[in-house]
Amino acid sequence: MNKPVSHVAVVGADSAAWIAACALRRAFRHRELAVTVVDVAEASKPRVRWTLPSQRGMHAMLGINESEFMAATGATYRLASEHRGWQGEGSRFMHAHGELGSELSGTPFYKYLLNEAIEGRAVNGDDFSVATLAARQGRFARPMGEGDALTASFTYGFHLEEAAYGEFLRQHAAKLGIKRAGGTVVDVELDGSGAVAALRLANGERLTADLYVDCSGPQAAVIGRLAANDRDDWTQWLPCDRMLSGVMPAHSSAPALTQTTATASGWLWRAPTAAHTHGGYVYCSRFLDDDGARRALSTALSGIADLRVDSLRAGRRRNPWVRNCIAIGGAAIELEPLVGAELHAAQLGISALIELFPAAAVSAVEAAEYNRITAEYGDGLRDFTLAHYRLGAARAGAFWDAVRAAPPPPRLAHKIDLFSANGRIHMYDFESFEETDWAWLFLGARLVPSALELQIRARVAQIRPEQVAPLREYVQRLVLSMPPHMEFVRRSGARSAQT
Image 1: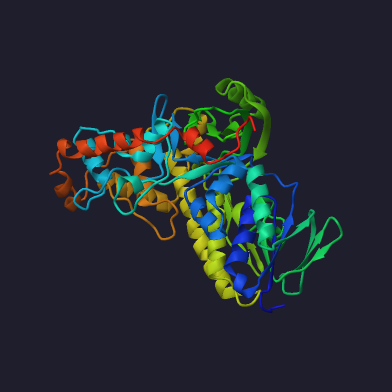
Image 2: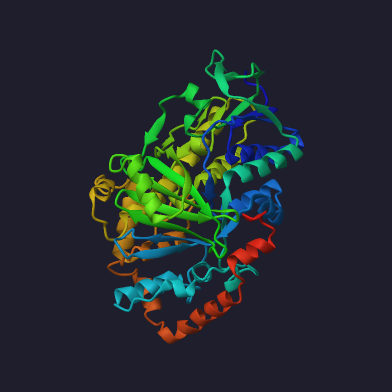
């Protein structure tokens, strides 16, 4: 069984499976690695995704031209998320994909904002962010330049429809020589050591490979046979277990922005693509049934139609690599889509697999390291998601009481406590969200530390408002020079509702 890896079978239906297949084929084309995708077409897939900027890097790795991708899929750009009501009615804040201001004497700009808040002179950080102002004003342009230039101070993700994106990736995979086998996996044959020997498909085919990559989502069609109950459950912290979603007509002036709104039993969302406006409700069934969710969503988003409900269950596998099977994406980690990290989580697994790709099919040493790294990444994504619920003033209501009833995970508790004490943001190894992302979140939740670190306090105390005013003005001028977001999308050739 323990022979060199020359053939990988990827099981899945959504874009994560095709990304995994393309990435492996591209990374090991010099070895002529054979890759077959078992396209489990009936598996549940999201209608729309909002992604992190890491999607751009993955596209580059796969050799995907962005203009061709935009034209083929009807995707739109994503500069930020706007979160409303998370700290009570009337509250709102932005999390932008970009820097917050510019460094001042080697000090992160958010430290200046914190000092002003501590001194009772709160300053709106949004005014110093290109991505935030552009998102608010419905404008977009790609970043330009490099280094500390404001024109290079932001980045972007995408809003994309899963069906169109998946088809685009299937066509790309075919060009790379990736084979496709259709049909449900009806049985997983194991050998005497407990490794996967073959997959039995509904069409009668028996598929053998050296490694099996499970991208089948929460059903975990393959790895579930090797380790059925090997899972950490996160529902004590993230109890939302249902998502109702639907579509509305496209908006001709939609911003490059994902919008969420906290409610009594969860949160509503809205995301634009070129062909549709998508909306949904992520909620906890202990506090709201499906009929109540439909009524609430229809009231909040007039005209939404074609509704469907999907199940959620937050958690991750303790060991996503078992014997010769590696779980990636939803088969390894499941989170509500609040921070847009579903494809990012899959990419983390794909990248780690490429770095640790084994010489032989069963490789315990590489598997152990893979499981360690992906566990830390997964816990980091959990903490960033949970922080939206835990930071700042608590909303009233039974659902919000339940979310905050359990003590937060120790690493998140330490991060919050340290920031509350001195404004320091502790970064662990293998975190997906950077210090600036956490700064957006802390500032947005209006969490003001008791003080700043002594060496930081001395620097920012010397900065006067008139010194930062030119930065605000430059950001405003830069944003005004950008075209409207949907105009930029149309220039990119993205399909609209009329085509």
